[in-house]
Image 1 (cartoon, rainbow, N blue to C red):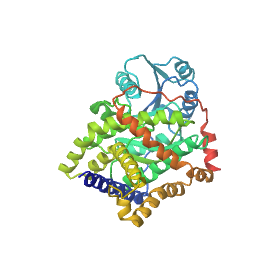
Image 2: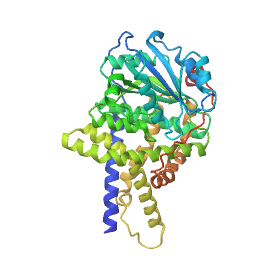
Image 3: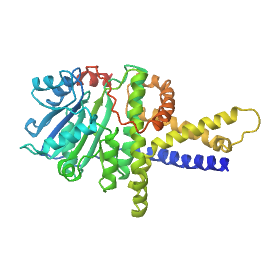
Length: 411
């Protein structure tokens, strides 16, 4: 009986893995860009910050010099429970410092919800709201692309997420490889197939009328995933803009990375538990593959948890003396699954090639499997601590200018 259950789980996971693998092939090409429009949309640019005095100045200077009419956008730094000079630096640089003090409701989701309520009270109203983290940098044409997408009918838009420090350590390199892979072989395929894209926490753009009608309501540890689920449930499909690039600072050490990824996975379990079944059943009833696909994306935390536990169980079973007690799909079709495994890892190499990653990035593919395997214990621990809603702040200290990021990309 147990063997049949384990075999059934293997088959289900294999189908989901095959589906994700097939999707990646639709990211090997890019469709023609949509129509361009003259600058017309007004933007409230929100920067979420908690004790970011080290890096917020570089982003503000970056945002003040975008290739978009300055009178069409205003910058607001959300100084959320800050105890440093984030607010003063923001004021000194001529932008709005919005100070929030609420030690009981901590985290980016709560800060955004508060800021939006404050924004709707202001005399000036904006066509759209964009959101960044304080450690980000943005390509000068970011708002131009958001203006085009809004004029072309998009209501929720995710920019291309890149890293500003991909070669600081093997950990930041692993993040960079993951980002290039996700942009090209997860996001772009869904764009090409007309499916819903998913939000990535920063570089996001929202139609103001949608936010006013819809409300924010995303206060989990992964507010981006939660808002994605809420959108797709309502039939609103987030879109992806490949040309609009945002650069994010990644933690240098394994310890800091593990803490950040633990928070992500705790939030993923929480959101998957609340949204998977409602979204999946709604997709089945409506015959909407978009809803089913988004529900499967929410389920990734459970797929990783169950898959890692099952793999360890089968490894142990094979290593014990005597005949294995459990049936393994890999043993049944070793050649097929060997090819499948090579293709699965080969996706990351293909992503680097398609994204024209710097040559030095390829050497980190040697240590990248260690990063991938480290998700197993993190996910396992996150499952048993998923009710923890305490926000853990990732410290950012790497002051990099956009020119430096672009020069390193070119080298």
